[in-house]
Length: 553
Image 1 (cartoon, rainbow, N blue to C red):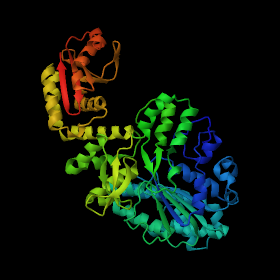
Image 2: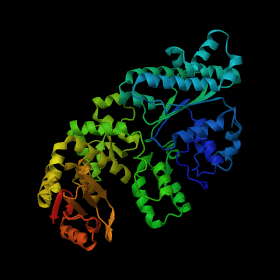
Image 3: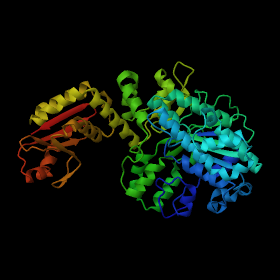
Image 4: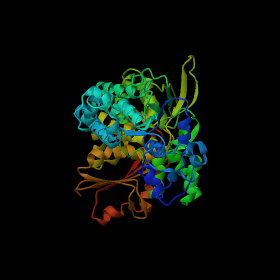
């Protein structure tokens, strides 16, 4: 790794990253691997924010014959490859990203596609005008720039552009398509799936199938949308998902790269184990890979928290979990077991389609795996079957917390009346009755949390979910300093005539008395009492999986 001064959080332009002295994990060997790849068309699938766009930008700057960028690669691996340095900036390059082509309806998404091709064609206007044939070719070219071309012309836009560039330079084209599946995923979620599939099928099959003007095509995305006929008939296509060994270390950080980063940024050795627990766990082609977005944000903010999960674009995952928690008991049990830190056997089909989730339960786990919400390892035959299954688990603490939060949100919606009723005794100052109702609720309803790991955090999240609907009449505070330490949860009534409560959670049912003593000794009530509150409940919860003891005073 080449250490530089700045952390490249959100930087996906390779030239900007290098010229402005950002940290860069050397992935330039990818350039040689792509160039020498036997297949003409390469599809690389990885989760979001794992460096796909940066790598595509790196490829574009290296090959583009309109640029002079050899200096950007000095000192990196590719600069020691004489054959590659002989072809730097020698190919016409089309670089197209679909990452922003998403919307709630097809009309707007289609307009974004037209805008994208208008900019692309305009970018080559001066180069290509002299080689375009008078009449229809020039008219169609201008129609695309002016966004008035017909649908068939847009579907032929990439194929035609490769031909025009070949004419201009007498050299085959390198076509780079980033995040090809974003419009497809958006169409699936928002109800215009058929329209977008038809468009993308025509566009990509036209540009990639038997195209003699193409030297190499490289596509990236999260999913392999193979069974939708998008890549129908492409005999020259090689697909490298996160399950393949080839290209495995070019997306995300390897353990060696993370160790170098932590050393560079003086992260003490006693904190590194926690960082690994929070952000590693991904298994790409038998390599342990860390989430780069979360690692970089940790180095920036020095706090262990869910950085990657809290970014956008996980709506499809949430929708899938919500739907199947309600409808599929087997799914609920699998989620429960994984939250508990266990592994579940699942069949992974890397060629499954989004629409198959409606009738094939295994397609859900493939979606989770490719999206970065699952780790799959140890492929083996299922007992009593010839099917190959994988041991699947949640990759790390960050993703585990996402599952817990999503399930809690579902519980709030699914059992809102139960939850309203559950919090009612606490509001009335009836701490013991609240404790009994809470214990009964956990035993009868909350099977998802029969776990041994992180019991304090788990029940902390459960209680915050239960209390969320009280926000109109209460300030709900979590892990705030009061007295000599930090309490777990405080319900502070906006009307002092109502009861407030301070709650301490201990990771053992046998420590419930210890929790109450901690409330007293650490003076957790000091903040409330100093503001004149008199109606204050003290609650200590001791938890072991589903076993719970509650002490209320």
